[in-house]
Image 1 (cartoon, helix red, strand yellow):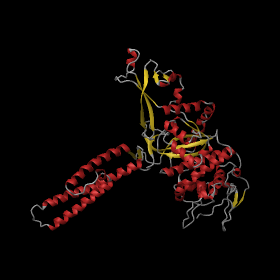
Image 2: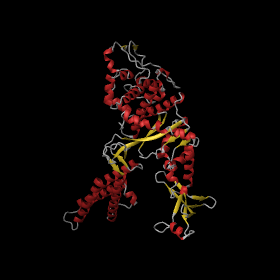
Image 3: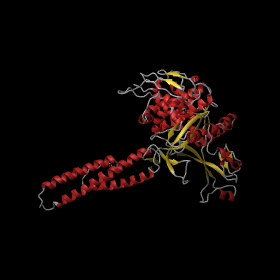
Image 4: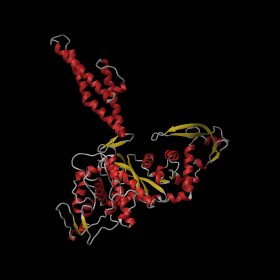
Length: 568
């Protein structure tokens, strides 16, 4: 259940002198949010107690605050008391910063901001603002809201965990020899659960010894042996409880948090330590951050996603899958990205899952291969003579390489199996000099590792990029996707996230990107906000700033004088 929130219907507004321009960001934000259906904005579950503030109102004030480079919940609360456009967006309500921050951190806000991009992409499609029928993909690193020195490294955890397992194995053997515990698998005994069992069994044995000692006469011969054994077992149980078990749990939890990464931050487990462009100390310091992937067209962001991977090529597949699941990718025919995404794995994904799309993505060596120096380099296999019928190569010096055998390699990061053809220089060449050139410095025969699938994919990408359409579309990449990151960091002042956790960071960055979209859209359209064209239209409320407003709410009457025009 939510409080009633319909802008303009509970107030009698008289516009005497001043009004908000038609393309004012507050007007654009209000009209855009009102155009989203209620079934998307509102939660399906109902809560008891006092009705919550309407999500549309909360989303509006956050979008407007981000457009004014205000990210603190306390400062947003102050804007609701001092900034007139913000007061009108909030329907003159006073909202605590706790409520603002709770909404911004909620799963519902995350869901709503994702849907905003779906509706905004539909708007771009309806108004013909999609550039070259292409989506441009790129990424940037942004620092996380985490302490820079709360790092946890995977190599260190693996090192100390291995040492702990060795100590546990030695202790386990000692308890087995003393017949304190039953035999179990060594790997099971090295886990935190196994250590818990060892501790329980040891404590039970200590209790048995205590009962036995209490029953024995004090002067019985040899009675001190039981006391010595009990003392020793107590030390072992104490070591298990206070040292081994807590450390084992700590290392196991850390290994789960890593999830294939090499590091994480203690204050934000989803953040990974990576190199940033903002390196003020000039020492290559690693900072906790996220790799923000964005898809744009005509400098409008149509989708985004934060990733903990420092490199771009590993984010390409999940990002495309996300765009496809939301129906955004269906609106574009061309996929454009830079050489950071051009790998055999990504090309294979495009060929298998997105065969109906065209892609303009160069591989790493594409620009280098176009140079005169590369084409004249005698060490490059591409410049050698190849006999297709007999399947052999001849290098520039005349050494012949015949096909030897097939080989396979498995990528550790992607799990993809790559097939290679191995060519080896003949042991006996035409001349003695060529026979010597056919060997390496260590005396082994020279080899060539040739990947037919990778070569085919490279040739196809090269053909697309060198076509007239490919050159035109790829030439738009730098002016389309790269400026948005500069605007986000320099113009809108977001150089660091303001929330912690991947999902919350996604909401935070999403609000920023949607604010940038709406501000650009309002500045370019130069029309009244009532001309928004959406398929789902629920409210048509004009938003104006008044010199004199009479609000009818019970017996409350508020007057705004033109002396407060500075608040506009």
